Amino acid sequence: MISVKMLKPYYIKADDQYVRIILAYQYFAVVINKKVYQFIPIEAKEIRINRKTRKVENVGARFAFQKGKDIVYMTMSELISLPDFLFQLHSIAKPYYDSMQMDSKQIKDVNAVIIDELEHQNIKRLIDKALDERDEEVFRKLVQLL
Image (tube, rainbow, N blue to C red):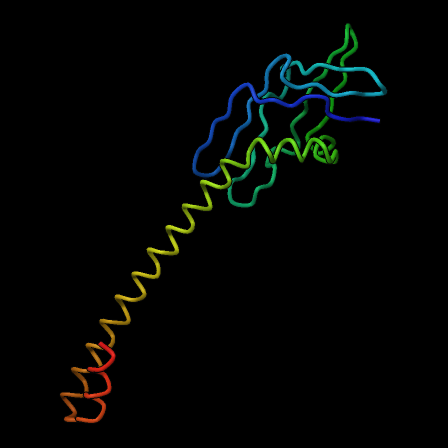
């Protein structure tokens, strides 16, 4: 039986694409067969999560855990199969997801403004066309839309 005893980031780096959770000694421990193994950074040292998909990207990374002279290696795919690992991991990265959602909301607002402006310009073009064709009925309907 494997479970996560502790998962704390040493520090977190975030950019436009990824949230990188950097691990160090004494910040990550797992329990394997009722024995506590401490993370040691001899191979993989970070967990890389895509900010848009919220999925772990480096699933092939291999993490080392030590108890005395015994070293156990676990891949990221083995770790993400543990529910408590995923829960703790996403609770650590959640603030970075939320800031990304605010950005997408702002993008939607900007897109709405652009669409409104394009519709307004299109109505003006249709008014010009109605004037060219001397279609007073269409002209009056379009003017009401402004």
